[in-house]
Length: 168
Image (tube, rainbow, N blue to C red; front, side, top):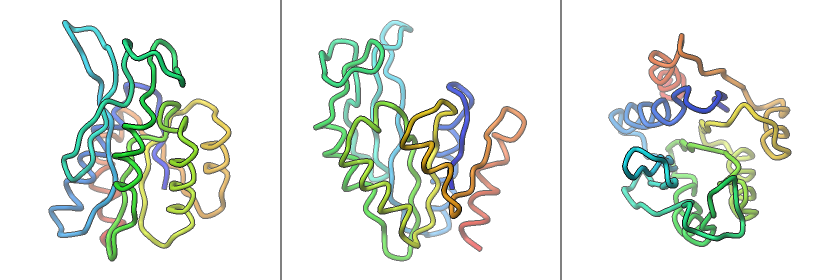
């Protein structure tokens, strides 16, 4: 399942709340979330954190890249070191990935791992930007993928609804 929204709509918050509900129900969980890094109120980069608590810098304004996404240099090595093991499907569990964005999708190895996850029987929820990207456009077009729109109107109840579906 893909949860689609524009930047700032609450994708990360929804993913974290979903993960908390699944964990509270005792479900083994794989995946990660990304967060902004701020200094003096100014966004300077993005951090990745796995649901096992491992953290690293995904992208930063002081990193040269390549690749670059906007003003941020993406640290593919650090991202892959954390993200690839974090998306290994857990036996009898579920996966939550926040997010399938331009920075994360700069990694061919990550795109391959995500494709394997979507081809598996593991319950999967991934957040995705509303913008066009060849990889996410292909996922959105798959017959076996449900696209759920996240909005201000549904963002508070969506994590519980998704958890109920996965747990039932």
